[in-house]
Length: 231
Image 1 (cartoon, rainbow, N blue to C red):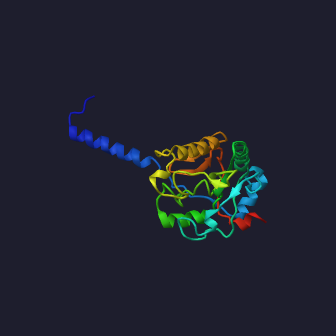
Image 2 (spheres, rainbow, N blue to C red; image 1 turned 45 degrees about the vertical axis):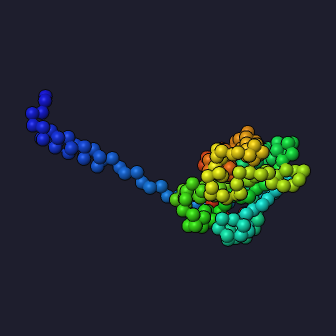
Image 3 (cartoon, rainbow, N blue to C red; image 1 turned 90 degrees about the horizontal axis):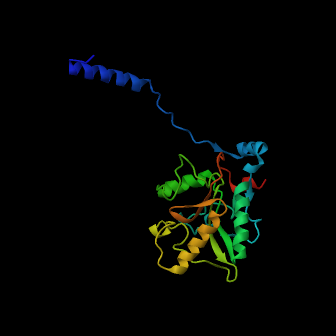
């Protein structure tokens, strides 16, 4: 039956729309779960693959842990020790990539790997730009032990390959798809990105050095200092 009083019809429809909207529950904001050492140790008993293992045991791997020095964008020492850790599956994939790079005369050099959550909080307080640092509301794959910052070194000269920018650059030139005029630098960046993509890593679009391991579902954000992982 057609409604003859337009204003009455509109009022009735608006009322039912209000009632319907009111009955739909508002989504509850998710709270980030951060594991300390106790919770982390408990998770290992259930699944040994969650272990954060040292990357120093990978053949030929090199460490240049920038956040254990003042040579980083914060100008502060963030870590007490120059260490690199990653979840066991990540470390295993990285070792496969390293062995392949070694065949071609290159070696992986790590700038950063597992990063305690508190470091992410510090970074955000300094930068507040989530294109380059993770939000403390979500944490990052670094906090989960599932991301690695790295470059390549020529095994003959022991020199880092030339890349578009320095590590931790906030320039547009640091983006993984930024135009590169120098053919050698472009080749170096392509070699790095392509080589790691063969073993389950994906480059971050705004950082040519940052690689996420894709098979990391279910790993928690951790806030354990390096010394807590060596006990």
